[in-house]
Amino acid sequence: MATVNALLAALHDRTLELSAQPSTPSTTEISGLSRLFGNAIRILALIDPPPDVMTILQAMPKAEPAEEPVDSPITTIGYTLGVLADTLNANAETVRNTGHRDRVQLRSQVLATLHHVATVSLAAVPVDEAFSGPALIRDLADATNAASYVPRADLHEPIGLLSLGQSSGGLDQTVARWAETAIEILASQTRVTSYAFQRTAATIATICSTAAVALAEPPSERPFEGAASAALTKASQAWQRAADWPPEVRLGGRTTELRHRSQDLDQALATHRLGQPGAPSRQAAMRAALRAAEGVAACHKSALIQVINRRNLWISVEALGPTYLTHHPGASRSDWVPDPGTRAGEVLLDACTQAWTALATAVDRLNPSMAAVGAAESPGEAPRWETVSAPNRSRRPRSTTALTPPGRGIGR
Amino acid sequence: MPDANHDLADALGHLRHAAHELLAEPDPTGQALALASQILDIENLLEELDIEPAWVPAAETAAGSLATAGRLLGRRPDIVPSEVWPALQAILVEAGDRGHR
Image (cartoon, rainbow over the protein chains, first blue to last red):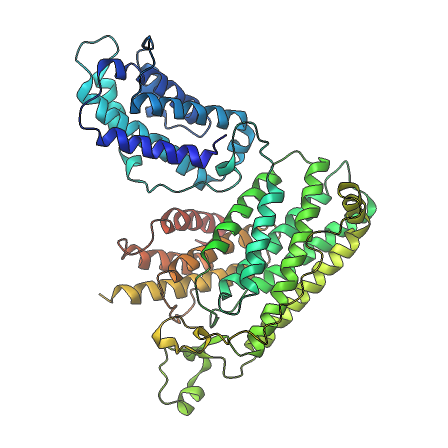
């Protein structure tokens, strides 16, 4: 079945078709409005509906559906909203736990559709017809006008990937996708950025803190899990420190895919935190997430060592102080220059090493239960993200962007 | 008025200070970490425009840096990616709610 994102994309396309059609809809086609409005109510009721719009929709007169199926954009939009409403209502808890931004985006897309439908229908609805309620449709067009200006965007996981017939629990998949992207980017000399280092460290910190909470939950708390929970809290704090790069140090570039994966994982972890406390599946999911985090952490550390050894970090000239400018009269205060040998890299690596050690300690504390769960889940199979060794980069071509003067573009 | 790139470069500099402030402070609830992650995402969006951050003086608080960044970005609504606005708005509110207004 189609996912929520696919349904929203289809809704957008059908709405464009409706707005672009040369003739106004016939009265028969308009009869599909009743279904359309009904399905819109079912969706909006889940996501903090605007009271004025709901009042208008609920006041709309009900119309008998056409005897024969009518092939029109209004009918198609009505059916699409119906599947969307079914999908969201089948996963109501996930929808309720979805973050503010995705809820706003979903609401805006439904309201934008209502706006275009109302605008087009207004021209077709004859005055005094039983269904028409032209004043209501005009009110609907006005009340939904602002939403029609909101740019369309896909929803994050898990809500964006919900579909009928599938369970909503997708933390494992979301973690796996994040880890795969993070490792791919961290391992690439030409693609790794300060954002990649900071964001992966921040995500590992979030995984650790979420796991710490999950493991401390009764009724499944056991002594070793309590110790592991405390160690995970320390690991989270350590990774937060590792995510903290001073503003005068950077490694520029684009890392769009990692941003999307990280946001998806944030959302999935937030949803996970709101799940049933102490549920075994909840704790198992966090153990799997920790295994993935370990793999990313290993790659993070080896990538940072490579970047520092190659002096690929860039430092703000302003932060280097007047002595640097005295010795480099051509430099401007606003420039970023390759690290001339400051302690910046050393400080970053120290924080990363401490974080890595803290995570390893926490996982060691958890090992009795992780081993048991791993054996129960997949006998004879090693954990997927057990160890990731640093890729051999000695034969790779040296990054050209790393040598690009900062004034010419990406300041790496 | 300074050119658009100058405003965005300054805004990016202030966002970097805000993330640094949040990540450096004690964070028992994880809220500062969550906010900093969102700021990093906005920085990443701006870097997609090939904006190089300017070195700017830090405000007294993360919320102060965020507010300055918001003002600078608000001067250039035509250039700033639309994805930035809801994220920035949410961050400004949350940072303010944490007592950093």
